Length: 436
Image 1 (cartoon, rainbow, N blue to C red):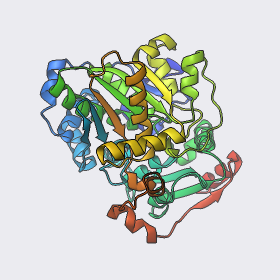
Image 2: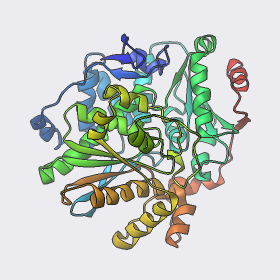
Image 3: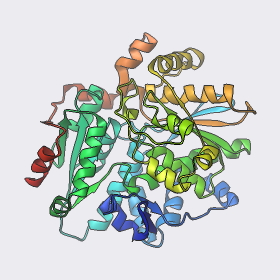
């Protein structure tokens, strides 16, 4: 597999190099040089496979020239003891539940594959690498659990103090061992900026062999495309229609993975990018100008991003043509009041409990059908990116219920947090990393 940098298309590397570098030296993001096309009849055949089987088939299309069949089997078998599920809300609307992994988040799908791919590549080497991760919630826990006790890899997680839910925080600050949690006095954008500055510091990057497990790393995005193939083809087999897919979006890595799948031939008619009150991308659609701004705190905190890194990839994919982007993506901004109303509506109509991120997506679906879709009977899949138990206080307040936590989260209540408080100044972060 060949990948180029968004900053310089002549800068080409293989998957292994991109996986361990995370970000190109020119600070660009890696993109597939060619998307392998899969004919629709072949996708229909693949739709009969269980999720892990489909994931193995798609991984082979991307990586078969670099990882032999035995290696891909090993990676997939170790990564996926869990699978997505489809929950039908009505005849035309399915929710893709992506919270059945070890940390109850969609990010388990990318993190588990990435950890096993790295493990595969370094299994015969004697070197230690440091993975930097900025998290607004779910990325941290997914990466921490995927890499916990993986030999030769140290994880350094940066998260914004006071801006993620207590249970999210406990998921990655209670592991210890090779997992270091840094509680940053700032926003997620500050955390993300620290990671980017660390990669730009050549001496630091080389000394600590830095890489990233954020969605800036292509090793996270490729496996996230797997569940788009699985879910869309389930619905296509039932309806024989192209599918509209709604993606709750913050840093836009998840949507980018869906666009990758569409480039490979997946029958998606349109993507809905559902954002919260951090509406940089809807503003871009209106003005044609990308203007990052400080993020604002919302109930859907994992989407509180004011400068989404992966928008660079989407612009590259469509040659910076806003009109071309609009042909593939529709977007809307959902504030907290509309988020709560969506949670209440889905609970009343379907007796189904959703978290605030999923609610942002389903409210966007409602708006799309009311204002845009000419055919109200078009099938829609809306992604459910996190288990409602991870946001139990918000769920209980919105629905006036006492939601029962799953055992995985109940057990966290009594575990001791282990985190180091740092400022948002790069000099402090660099000093800490230098001494590891």
